Picture 1: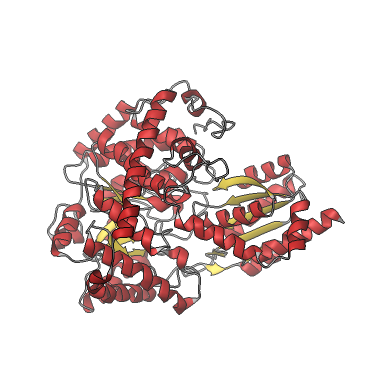
Picture 2 (picture 1 turned 90 degrees about the vertical axis):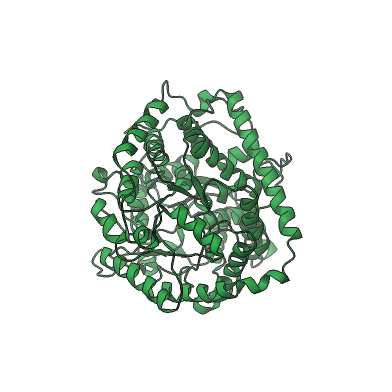
Length: 603
């Protein structure tokens, strides 16, 4: 495996951008040869048949989207993908049938593949698994797409992964004409896989393969899984759309569509972002607008308020300025666990009826403020793209080389890109050294949440923690890092030094960094169903180094039992506590642990 040799000591806040610092390799693979291989493969392997294409009578989903937009109908998107392939197939049939029986159409499924599918098939044995679906060969892909006439969308863990080409070939052969997730290329790191050049090569060949198809294949990119979720300025998030279009459409001749929505919790900016996409449309309609799961902060049915809130905005937006995005009703139980089939049905029946009524809201809406913000997003996004291309060229990068562009953007990272090229004015006190044109609403909400959590501490307790000189090593097990951002904001306000182990923090690297930097505590934010296994790996690394530190863990504390006959994960909080971890169901538990640690150091 080729090891990454990136700019580990380069500081974007102080150091100039130079190609040699970002790409120190003496030679990269030949991008033109990689693209040629992908195009040659496209002459031999093309889009296969599936129930959706046959029933709809279209050449690809892009054509179907345009037809549906012309009809004025709002499309529905559901996420499915249970660990049990038979249950996934049953879900494909039953959800479609239930929506059809109610007089509606379920237009597309997003398939929740397991993140271990990002490894090449030959390298999967012995690798850790998450909670999603594992498809072992092209026949498994086709077995799903033949279940009912719903458009198959293979999003996560196909493109952007070491297995990008083999998974893209299997998805295409099974009739999928919407394949992603390009956004994950920039942020997702598979545990134990350090070959970022090889991952870039596989991604580029897959993109060239899809771009050269005789019908339009949608390259899907979820902005919230990429850098857009990490920018403090939504104008940079829109700039990410334009930069990805530059690479996929201008350099490779393909077609890219963008999804957003996880982190757009404020209705105004959610609407404004959709209208910005309508002002600056791509070559194909949008894929879907994802449910705002960040707003699911209650229990069970109380989350219906959030579900209705974002679905109303998304449905009205499609009536006002159609962009082809299907709306996505995320079951209200998503914040607690993987929803079961009947819960996905209920959410989509809810969305169906809400979408039917959405047009009635149009006369009530004053679009002036949304359009003002949309204008800022478009103008700022264009400047971000222009700044980046000009800055890259000045630093010695070949901006016409898609491999070099992909690798450089991935290695430099969101925070550095925003600092260097963001359209906002310089602001040294701001987190990314730029004043945002349109502040990311989720970041603003996390800042507010951090201060709310700290309100429970007395001034004396806050002062005691701040005076203790604490260092906390903080890492996340995957790309869902909002919990990590919240914890960072809390610690920053308490003047606690944060040793950032990043996302997909390798246990060995995290423990080594904590020991080298003299951290007094380890903190983990987890999401993807590996909480107990990850804790055990951390503890094993600590034991090997004879290191004893309090270990805090929060997030989705679940895992699928190895002897389970169900595809659903179970809560493992009690197991984590029994193993010696401090389980942080709320940030308040972490604050108590910090205060206790501070008092011990000052005793």
